[in-house]
Amino acid sequence: MTVETVAVGAVGACDAEVLRFRDMHSGYVFHVAPPDAHPDLWGRYLRGALRVYRHYEVEPALEYDKVSDGRSTSLFFAAVDPSGEVVAGLRAQGPYLLEDEVHGLGAWAGRPGEADLRAMIAERIHQGIVEVKAVWVTRDGIAHRAQLGAAISRCVVHAAWLLGARFGFVTAAAHSARMYESSGGRIADGVPAVPYPDDRYRTVPLWWDTHACRASATKLQGSLLALERAALGAWFTKARRLATVGDARIGGLAQA
Image (cartoon, rainbow, N blue to C red; front, side, top):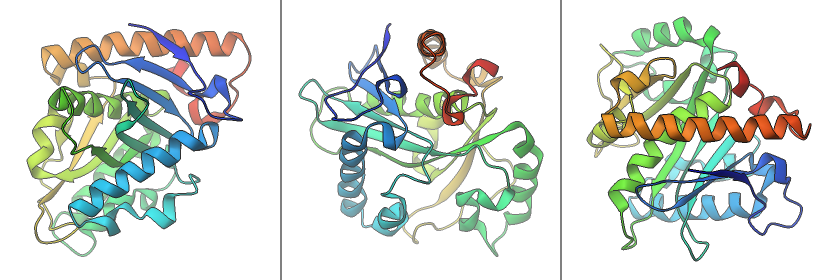
């Protein structure tokens, strides 16, 4: 497995802040960057997210107008097919400094489980929480879609680790929880599912502990996490040696 810094064809992209790795099982290449390092790729990722969210009639949950400028996003991951089309992705916020910055908490406001979830956030926030949002995989007939979804779940771990946070956090429909659990995510104990973004869905909160999630991941996912983490670490070391990465957005990697 290899990871390289890459501009992916964008004019003005900050090459040192863009990396990529190939998922060994799906075959797709994942590009990772802050939005301002690759605005073209960021735009393509967002347009893909918008198409998927519109199809499922949950477009308000994407908050497209609010997040499209990229300021609230620390890193995004975009899976690209051989033709250059973005076929899946996610974005990461954080690490957070305050409990109320955790966006997903709002789904439990005034509902059973809010106090327990707040307590979990308070317990973890001093060690760093990164929240993953706008997760999607294209609905078009693509090869290895299940493997692509599994790779997306690993990216939650990579996002937290790259940003120097111990914990990853996602709110997701209960029917997708098994996918996230395969990479070491765990549904928050004692926090009941809520109807979010509407009554068609039962949404649950999931946590990843980057210090321990490989032990609770499936054997395959654990192996891929280790390989990808080693490759990402090699990229970061090279970038630091070239003195081209000084931004705190990805400055926590060496501490993990």
